[in-house]
Every structure is written in structure tokens, then in C-alpha cells.
Image 1 (cartoon, rainbow, N blue to C red):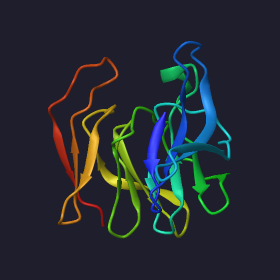
Image 2: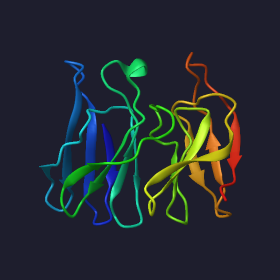
Image 3: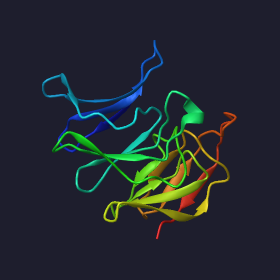
Length: 179
């Protein structure tokens, strides 16, 4: 499950895995802290877990990657966009590489573009205006799962840690300069 704060204070809860049955969910809910109530909202087109989300400049939410019940063998390249005004998801563009375990390795830049730095060694950038993913020059030393990405005051992005596909943790850091 991924929880994502919306600009109006509500929280979008996206997909996840049911622990007892192992079912991967496509369902989403909105939690309203002012009423302490959950309400269903539109379903995603694909069931997802171990995915990421980013707030776009227009208030919509970009949902990225994740996987199906096959976990590592079921990684997604796909994205979906949630519109809080309509409560619906629409299919977004595909990323260049399938990615999962990237929940904190996505950073929204001051320009509104979204840097995707987890789940693969290669970095890519989502441009909301053209709704495309483009390659970012350079790459991490190897695919990082559960790394973090933080935008610095300079506009650069600091990518830290995570682990590789053999679950070996990393203390590595990368400084990404996005043109």
C-alpha cells in the first residue's frame, strides 16, 4: 500500500498487498482526516504493490511501477495518473525500465518534472507537460531498491542507500544534476 497526501489534506491510499491472502490490490481509497472516514475512489488499471507516487504541479498524482503477485518477476514499466477532481485513474506513459521497490526514490523537481531514481540503475525523468519519460545522463552503480531521493536547495537530487537484487545494503550516495 502506498499512502499519499493530497494538497487538500486528504490522503490517497493506493493498492498494496493483502497479508493473509497475498492478493495485490488495484483498489484505492481516500482518507479524510477532518471526518476520520475512508471513501473508495477510482480503481487503478493494474493491481500494484511496491510502487511509488508523485504529486504533479496540477494536483494530479503520478503512480509509478510496482509489481504484481509475482513480485520481482512481475515488475511494471507502466504508470497511471490519478485526478482528485474526478476520482479516476488514466493510463500514463511507460517508463523505459520496469521498476519496483522505489517508493522513496522518486523526487519532484522545482520545474515540476519527476526524477525516477529507484528500481533500476538508469535514471529517468517524467515531464508532465509532454507526458513523457526521458533518459537522464549517467546511472547508479547498479539497480537500487528502497533507495531514497531528496531534492537539495541547489536543485540537485541526492540519492542514498537502498539495496541490490541480492539484498546487500548500500551506504553509497549519488548526486544527480538534472538539466
